Image (cartoon, rainbow, N blue to C red; front, side, top):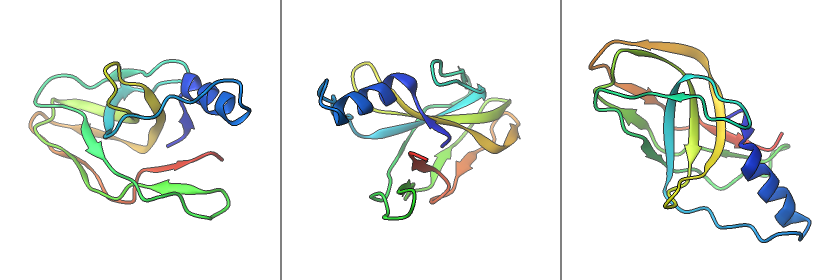
Length: 130
């Protein structure tokens, strides 16, 4: 993943300098797919149609690498997709109003035909503050 959502990044910073308490992330974490890339302030255009629904993803605890990194630990499979080109992903919590936490572009966009299955292999989603 390329970056933290701007609102969530500010919440993390404020919590670490003790100006505001951080609202806990509500599990499970959901992966959403996008046909246009987002920015730090906006999510982009989410895939719609077909049988597309966001998928639950899990992660390993962050490593002691420099920088620390958390890595996805499950295959994310999106069956029966609509015809589209997937260019980016976003990770959201499962709060009543889900919060976007992380976002990023795919290394290469993926053109899908109606009915295709889109998969993100275990270990392919990474979250790092660097």
